[in-house]
Length: 275
Image 1 (tube, rainbow, N blue to C red):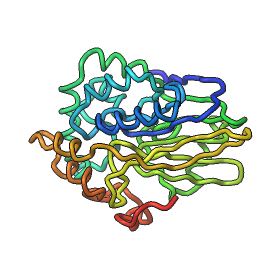
Image 2 (image 1 turned 180 degrees about the vertical axis):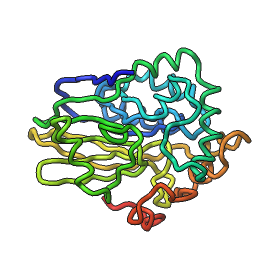
Image 3 (image 1 turned 90 degrees about the vertical axis):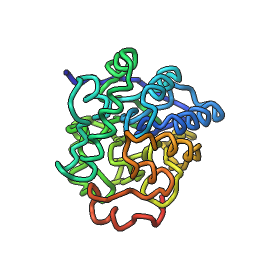
Image 4 (image 1 turned 60 degrees about the horizontal axis):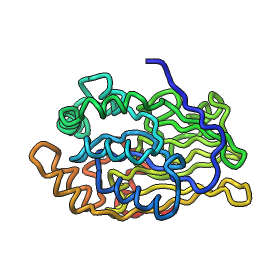
């Protein structure tokens, strides 16, 4: 399938950035309520992909996202689902715990999604571009070149740099890795708002998002945490079909394993996130 880029021209005013809803209906409900309370229009709410994932309500989550009218690109999960692929395409090491867990949650999600939801996923672009406070912004999932590439704050800038060059962007907004961070070099900014479907391995059940603000025509961003009904999410996941380890992570805020993480990020497990 060809790469589809949705060009939004210029965005102004408060803008909500988030990623990885992961079939977590309760987190999405809380975020939608927050956007409405803050009077952030749906077209100013942008997701970095993976609307579907580890949690128990994939169909309800996609339908609420569609009803809300927020913007999203495709994550690797959406690509695999709409192509009826056999796995999630997360680029987990074969035989790893994450790979084994994906053999439970991915078929579960496949079995729950309606044709209507799959058709909606087919409408999502691979990337979104827009201007914000005179900066060109490109939204990617993993990276511009590879939807499943894990890029973290500790990832060398030389790995990130080609994304700015290929897209001629000042700001890259990315997802996939599950951790919120920002990394700036001179006038270029790599910004990951984090995900709302799972905690950030920081020992808290709260999840992460970002608010952009263009006051005084400057590009301002703030990392924020979101409280939601996480106990209900965890309870719904205990259905005998999904990994119990993920339902525990929803409560504890600690990942079952750190096999996908570089040494720096792995060493921060449970210590909280300072941004």
